[in-house]
Amino acid sequence: MLETYSKNRLTWPLALGFSFLAWIFNGWLGLGGTVVHSAVVSPFLDSLLGMLVCAFSIYLIAELNTRYSLLSNTDRTVSMTFMLLLAMSTFLHPLQKPHLVMVCYLVGYLILLGAYQSRQAPIQFFSVHLALGVASCMCPQLVWLIPMYWVSLVILRAFGLRCLVASILGVSTPYWFWGILSLWLGGHEAFSIHIDQMTMFGSGGFEMLSSKQVWAFWVALSMFLVGGLDFFINIHQNRSRTRVNYYVVCVQGAWSFIFLWMEPQLFNSLFPLCLVNAAIVWGHFTSLSKGRIPDVLLSVIMILWFVTTIFIG
Image (tube, rainbow, N blue to C red):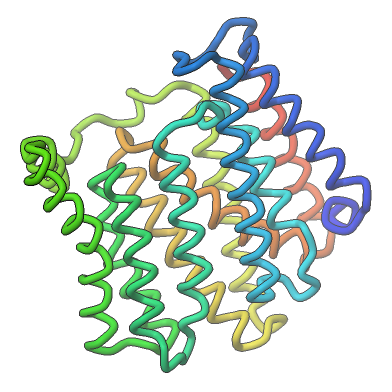
């Protein structure tokens, strides 16, 4: 079954068709027969615009896979898994701020993995944190992802004082522009509130989330744990450069899931980060694993995908 999922030519068209139908029915009628989100333009157009942004994100993760050979055969498993996870997460279908967070995160990922033993690492790290700074303008608490990138820098063997300074400058650059613009236009109160929100954390738990969000979280976490465990068990099957990339993915994914667990009120902004890393390690699992147990795990996850997408409201 793993062979069918990862290498069959019909798998990609079927996954694309399923994702497209999920988007259309959710945006037009809602999977339960009613509109499931408030409309900015109209439910259908909101979903269409969200689908276009997510399609661009799927392209970015496909480019990430191809550029850094995350899979030895550079197949479409990673991008296809990411597409199915987005289709499952119907609360992310309408156009919203977390879409910009997702795009910025993927752009930063493309630059980050290229910093491996690079002489241009400070410049690349500035660009990575510039993308993070833009994303934090949408969700101020994202600045607490900075330590995650510093750990990634150590793994990529590019750690140094210049990179640390570049990271601080990169994150702060969008705020310098925003602060100057706020003073010029007289909107400094909104800027001050945004800065204060960086240290404001919620005290609520997962009970504030919808059943769809909770189910989607557990499905993504299960995929990340299975894929990550399989990677470390079969680590010898990967080249040293690929292993370094997956160490970074595991750190990024673990930090994202833990942060989301601690701050569930930021669910829609943090969950796309979890999906990116879950899709990468699950793609590695389905492409390189063989045997009855992996086939059973894939079957269970596919059933959970389908149930979460169609039946959980």
